[in-house]
Length: 403
Image: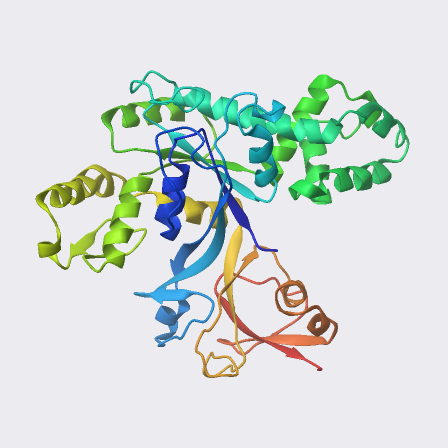
């Protein structure tokens, strides 16, 4: 399954800027609410140390990039329309927003940490709005969206049909929720976390439904708060206050700074590696005094303080921490670590931690090959790997089949 990261937030909070910074796309950006109407898509990259460094090899990546010993692995981003209060009732572009959001697995909430946007995304004085309230309202809206999908208008009739058969209830609820990428394991876990294991669904009250909806959303579409526009003085104050009240993950970020750095790098004016705290100016004559000042501000107010702009950290956190993904390298030749065309360390694949070798073959390579699977071989130790071998981060291996 290909993971999709959804970019969410109030109108004008910096969602499209984050997408542009991550992917060097050209999504329309404006201070006016609802500039994004149709979802913008892009390919971004998570960053990890490449195994070419450990093996002292010159690699030839096919499905990813290797830059200065760092492997950049493509992932999918989706920037949807801004969310306003009562979006689950259709206010603003609520229905469209939530329908677009159904495709996402992880949500990055781009938060205007300066507090300069009102509830509808209109510009107000810095500090006039409380960013913590934005976190609460957005999570509440998405939780309520889940609840409406779960209960619809026929909830009582629905649960009466399965008053004695829990397994059938789970199967039918899964069908009801499959359009928003929820699986049976997540449903069972949400029921347990909501303390509803021993309560018949027919007896669930309004609070039970709310608790279940919240738990299911948190499990199936976890939210990471991205504290955007972090270079302002008020931003640091707001961030510290929020950390005292909010238990979820928060990543300080300046999407605009990342966009400028990557754009100047793309134009070969500077050399910049995403996720680092420095850049080298290659063509100073191409920069105006104003641009020099802007770069100096990025260095002193963002890179020196937070060690990076936060964009790469947000993407990495989403994939490696929240989605619990690891990297593996399948190869064909155990001696040269190459594929059958001679490409060294050609592909690195993201898989969930705990994936077994045979499941990897079935899900990531080909179902037919899984039926003919014999064993795997660790490319470094040359040890044989059985079908129930649990793949580890940075494993390099060959799959042997009878076909």
